[in-house]
Length: 103
Image: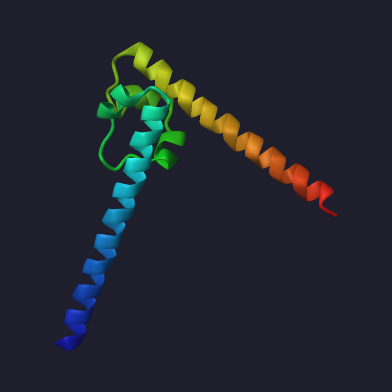
């Protein structure tokens, strides 16, 4: 019986921790969207949307999965997604450059 209580408590702590991480991730997403001038577009996404999820979003998903009918809003969002990909590539290039010249 005591083992069962520990398992239940452990699952509760884990799910509580997961919820906090999701909330944190969504809060970062909302702040990012605000900083990029897209605070009005947050309404299209669920409360579990994170920056990681945003980076992998496609134009097609914006229309079909998130039901964003406004073409201008889809283009605005995709421009930010594209910007994220460019930043990721720049970071990778800097990292490669540093590792090549570190020796």
